[in-house]
Image (cartoon, rainbow, N blue to C red):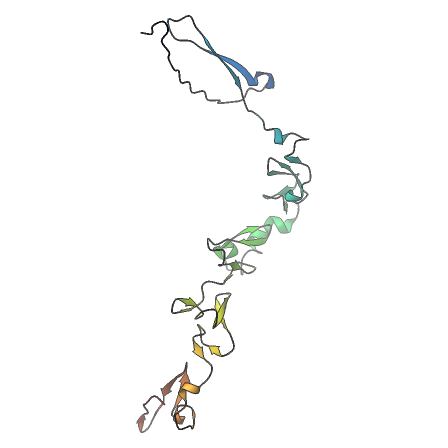
Length: 227
């Protein structure tokens, strides 16, 4: 029902399923014409079947690139490894038996373990690359990614009772001078366990634990009181 002088918009969806083997066929001409009208719309189509950075001499093409461990060619930002090398950066040697079978031993804590890198990293050429945490302050470390600085005991929702008390190293609190305990929440000093008039710690009838007297029990009964 088109009339002379009427403007019409056409929408065409063209999908390339396969590139022709002959590069001379990578440029094609497509004709689109409405039924009943003696007019043709001509489309010049150029297929992108190769990238310039894949060709020698281009900016993105570098043989024996440092980013590929000097064992591959950098093409469009991706390493194309030389024969006998593999890995994202061509860092692994396929001819090295140690690299071939390292995943079975070097990346596991002991012979009974079946998990590489403690389940917290990837085994690359016999060495663990530990996962990154969303929080950059939280770090997984260790030969087998067995350590971290965020899973230590907390006190009042602070690791190791806060930075003034201690630091988290390989899952355990390392207390600063003057502090002790699993979460570094206890003072080493026994001052709070000393009776007001002086004398022995907890009056000699108990032990001082984390600044508080724990009274002992003898044949005559249990001692009580703050000191």
